[in-house]
Image (tube, rainbow, N blue to C red; front, side, top):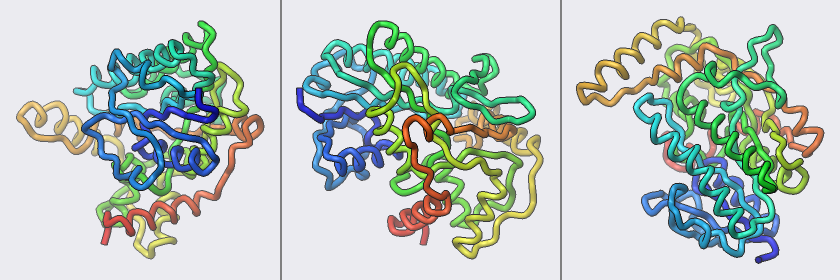
Length: 331
């Protein structure tokens, strides 16, 4: 077994691309699992091994052979109701499969990337959830959140069999290498392209994606087996986030708040009716339902136990803007 060989799933994604770079900078060797159809632009020029495969493949164990650590970052993200089965296959059964393969070949320690989506939203007066809170599964909005909750249960069951697994729950990362982009990257891009005339009254916990990458490495080094750690930083309304974007770009933030029922009606028409006629919907019902909640979280445990960095959100915003502009996403 190689001294510092780490196997990374989802290495070509947003968090994964930043994690792979950090691991290489810190002296780790990296082997990345990637589907044959995946774009590997975010990994170009890096000295690493790439093996082709899918989380649901039955022959994953040989691909992990020789690896000391596993970072299971990959997940399918979709808020479309038509993708429920795909979410279960990739996020739940895929997690079960990769953890079984890691156990088979004797991987020493695993960091599993869950999400604050699996924790849910705290509906108390304070409204800020920590690792001790768990929303009842039936109150999690949408198949994606439920799939991340169920995948986390797979990780906990694997811990009960003796596997060394630490769970991290990233909040809303922002920064460079968000190539797909993520929903938060879409917000930044729509703002830069002047395609955001309105905003909804919602809130998120934002964190620099490089801090999320550090949170993974620190979880490997310091995390307690079986525990979960929220990787977040600043709770902020969407309106305040857009005002920050305005200050960086000189573009005007939208001033008119739109009531939830309007985008919800549009999403229902698109996803429930027009999709059946072959039209590709542009707005998911569950994304609007989620936006009706302020998704605030407390990261003090990860800060205290792991030493999670808390880079100013302004630094992450500037990094995201610079990356999108330098890579041709906006003129």
